[in-house]
Length: 160
Image (cartoon, rainbow, N blue to C red; front, side, top):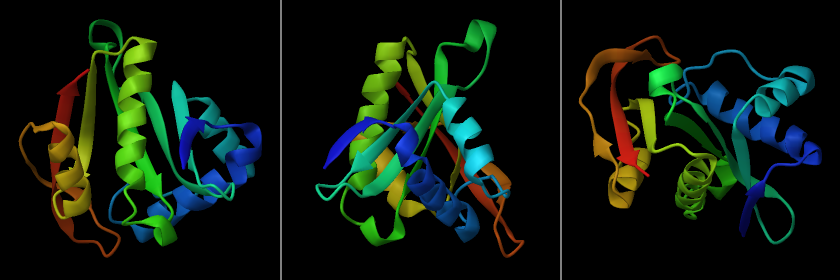
């Protein structure tokens, strides 16, 4: 598996993977699904998008990287990761996070911050902590799950 910058011909697979996570309703704050037009614009609008490509050419996962804020806080970036459900448990997420950190540093960001990691997303939380991210606290009932109940979110950060 390799991690590389996305290409235009990756967009349909990227949209399918992204929408799968959005539809799950337990990790991403987005509720609107992407289509070919909105997806192309969404991915093009990021500072960087990486894709994990399996040996057979299938995209196993992706990440988006962008500023977390502007101006005096513009050195802080944010990212989101999506792994195809059939590829979970194969350390795709770890490869994506590590590549994202390298790309963020290359671009000039000095801090990577995650604003809304759902407390029950233990696989993501354990991954971030294993890599060296620090939890900043807890925002009680900061995330509305697909079924309508609220869960805590745990912001994380790491210096790059």
